[in-house]
Length: 305
Image 1 (spheres, helix red, strand yellow):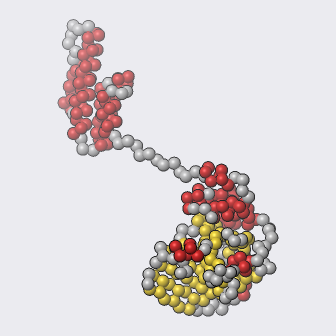
Image 2 (cartoon, helix red, strand yellow):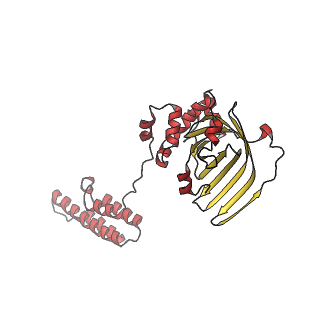
């Protein structure tokens, strides 16, 4: 490298006397080109890509004028030594979901998203949040026939089964209610990441609340519930826990909590319930959406089978 630099300096500074100015410039230009070629051959022997790129770039800057560097040998060698930049995938847009949801009212939007597949749900998360905030603020008529809708046993399957789909925490719900949805960043709420299904049976007044993973593990709380139709409030408490892992299963009774009686029990206030979805606000202050699931779904997912 040092020898090359000396040769370059020599070639530039020691043109023979007596030549005309044009000839001297031509000789210097040729010498520059020869020097660039020598330095680029050195690039190929360097082990590090970044070092090679740096030497080649320096050669291009020192050896050729700007007009020759573009598209010339130096640039070709430089491009070959530097890996192509990684293409960055654009973030998912909500444009596709918006076009589908634009003409729907808030309740219809929530139902559409809740009953859709995971991909559509993820790109519609923000719309879901804003629609739920609006529903929560409206003092609408209490859902009718709650006992039949939520816990009916017409099919003889031990009541009705509801999969938890989406939740909004207390903090975001209160912030959006008091200051507007624009005060809450991100999606505002979350689609529940695991399979969680609740079962209410009006004949026994029993509730089951289970988590199910890959059809091989389940954790199920169960207890009594009380539904107050007039206020659309469902009180409940758990008195048993059952756990299954593959062929193994066991369970035990939970100790009674004397403080959790009457209106001190956990509860849901139902904002809406029909044959497809249910929307409720919990004692913890958040809001949630469930969708009704049938026997075929439960068999496929290993839920209460």
